[in-house]
Image (cartoon, rainbow, N blue to C red; front, side, top):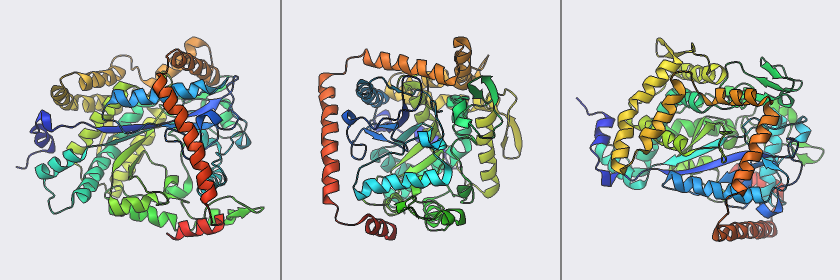
Length: 518
């Protein structure tokens, strides 16, 4: 009988385990003193959103995105994220960095300024892509924020793993891509658990759904909430669109994944063709296809490869394989000053490693539909103690199954802690188990309980939390060396943007044509 992958992993020596490589991209709106979306431009002191290595904008000029380098420890990554938050908070004036995933006060699409990246062709392309998102889906859903967690395993691990489990007929890179998709298939099977444990957006400000039909309940005069929802961000009011529902993206292997995405980038979509590419002499979208570029595809997880300047991400994946995976379904933790905590990161590492170590057969169409439904059900009704999920032919209770899943991770947590000589993973696992035992202390319920006890609606409660985080971050002195480093980042990024703009020789139309033909 073949050894299980867990058993094979157990045979590794402590000296052979090199840990995880990790980084975070954390989004958040800038809001004014009244809790309304900031109408001011990206602060000059934060440098160029086009070229700054740590601070950029996502969809909106008001939607900051903070990026950490890659670290091999959770502590190192969170320290870097904290430093970036401190520097940002120093330069926001009276504004705050919004603590929740669901947005602050809005006044329709026109209140959400699209991000501006300067006059270069690459900057214009980023802006036009966002214009395309606006005309396709509206700006409101683009104002939602989240945390993206990037994780990989080091080269030395993959070399050992290939020797241990076989696959010598493949190049190391092809083997890594195959194994990352092995992990991804199991992530698809279990991603509902992350929404249960980390969903933290059960409520929203009434301005987000003004003139929109919805089935939310009234919390107070200015707030709506999902009576059993764990994450409105990941539900029907959040990231979704009809065109992408037709894609049937296959996550079984790299070849089918990239082929499906490539087809979507080159397949015309009649409603987008009706919109056209130009309006009143201005570009309103990059093209009229199902996807303008790969990044338009919304999913809970993406296989990724760092692309060279001017290289399409999908071409980087196709030519050099998977480098890391990006977990995209995480709500901001509104109780955490930087939106994410160390136990959450450590649990994610444990969860993802176990996805690699479990059996992972390919996902057929029927199972794919069940997995999507499980995810949607937890997003919409995760706080319901009687919620049922469909696992194969069985209907199971979500909470009981979640606890069983956590229990199954205990041996792996103990093994990693034994190698590391601490209790990091056992403690991270215990923290998640506490959420599901007894009175169910899920983050989504904690948010509603905190709002109730404060007597405040979503906007006012989140504004108060945002101020608390701002004060706590500013109370911590930023080391002088770090302060100077960030000032240098800002100055250098502004200079780099200017150099890029001065180096352009093509018209934007020619630049866009060349990019799309590449």
